[in-house]
Every structure is written in structure tokens, then in C-alpha cells.
Image 1: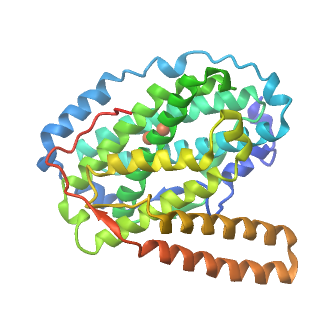
Image 2: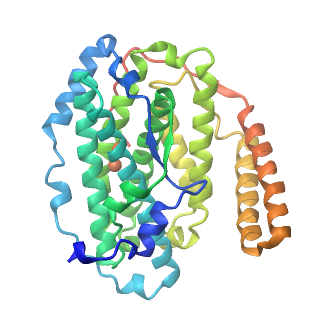
Length: 354
Ligand SMILES: [Fe+2]
Ligand SMILES: [Fe+2]
């Protein structure tokens, strides 16, 4: 049936996933030769332990289990329905972006250590994306992943940006999933969709992916020194602030969870920061009142941009220009806030203990 479908009959969720927006997950390409040259000998013992974990594949059956949601409460709450789909579409884009990137790296290199790890990671992300698509399908809005792969714009990222950014997105992904899972364990009546019951094992996959990137960085200490520290700081702030803005754009979702998005985000920051001490020579001080004020100002400016976009016309355009400059200014102020020094531990590997 699907081969008879005209090329342009793409549903709204696929369109949304394909669209490149400032804060939406992107697809990446990189310089594969740098991955070819990676040498993980300095962390060999920890690397081999991690690879045995990947090989064991303990979540093989987890994503095959059936999920039977009762969709009546979602259907009766259009705002929640909309925000839930938005969450699923943005999550599937992020999961599938990881899948495509890891698979591309694997295909383009002969370095056996890195290729094997990338293959396992692509395996997991493909499962994750497939599972989210099951949930979307039950809501009649499955994303066409083949179309997404072909049509999505790809952003070129230098290898070291890939290490910093994917490391952080894996670890923050772990922190997000486990925080929701633990919360719903305590408040099962707030679990409005069964997909959240899958999060515990799921986030352990993300944790392991983050371990691979942590070991890659620790194998080459210059990635964590000198001017690279400026890049680490940039990515920490970019990942944290993007999450803050996006989560605050889904108030209905957090209300349904019985969670305060600000509290949720600071819990996620705290966990991610604790984990990131395995690699980064400093951490962001997310408890600093200036940091918290700065994030709120970013959020306000972002909401104002959305309004100006809606307003349209020349005035809307001018407003957007002014607000973009304001956002850059707030971001720069956040960027120069003092950080906390961190002594990198001898042992890199961590266990997901949250
Ligand atoms: Fe994933
Ligand atoms: Fe992952």
C-alpha cells in the first residue's frame, strides 16, 4: 500500500520532525576520519567492560513488549494530547538522529573499537525510535522515518562538537527519563500513558551510550583542556538552556505529571552535572541565583519571539531581530558566570544510580 502513496502525502508529525527549528533536535554529519583515528588504548580495560555490556544486550526483549494505552483521557484533553505528541515527535527525532549518526560513523570507518560501539548504539537508538513510533501510530500520527532520513537538513559538526554534544544529550536523556520514571513510581495515578513504564531500562541504554562518549573523551585528554574548555562550557549551557525553554513550552504535560517544570529541570541538571564530573574539568553552577534568573530571562525572550512571529509583518520582524540580539546577550552573560572546578576521577566508568 505504502508504495502507491504519493510522495507528498506526509502527515503533520513527519512534517514537524523534518522542520529545522532553532530548538528542535537536528541531524548531524561529521568528519569520519577523526573517528577512524581514535585510540581507546588509554581506557582499554573500561572500554572492554562497557563493550561486554553492549554485547549482553539486556534490553533486547524490552522494546518488543506490547503497549496497550487507554487513550480516552488523552483524547478528552486536547492540550495534553497536543503536548504529548509534541514530546513524542521531538523525542523520536532525537532518537533517530542518534541512530542515523552512529550508523553513518560505523559505515564510514574501519576502526574496530569505535565501529563496534557505534553499531550497538545505533541498534539501541533504532529500537527507541521504533518504540516511540508505535505510540505515535496508536495515536494515528506515526512519523515516516525513511522520509525523515532523506529530507531532514543535516548540520555538519566537527568531531569534538559531536563528542561534547552527544555525550551531554545521552546523559541528560538518562536524567530526564529516570526523573520522570521515579516520579511516576511514586504517583502511579499520574501515569497517563504506558510508555513511561518503559523508561527505566530505556534510560540505562542512554546511560551506556554516554559512557562510550565519556571514554572516547577521556582517552584523549587534550579534548578536556585548554581552549576546548570554552567549547565544553558552550555546549553545557546550550544543552541546559534549550531543555529549560522547551520544557516550559509544555505546561499541560507537566501539569498532567503533577510536576513543576522548573523543579523537574533543576533535578535533571543536578543529575547530569553529577554524572558529567566523570569527564568535564568543571561544572555549571545551576544553583547560582544569577544562573536561574538568566534562564528565566531567556525563556521570556523566547516566548516574546514566538509572539512576534505570530504577529508577523514588518513590526513582528523588527521585534524578532531585537529579541534575537537580546537572547544572544543573555546567553553571553550566562556564559561568563563562574563555574565550579572539578577534579576528574581516575576511574571513568559510572553506574546509573539514580
Ligand atoms: Fe535512545
Ligand atoms: Fe542514546
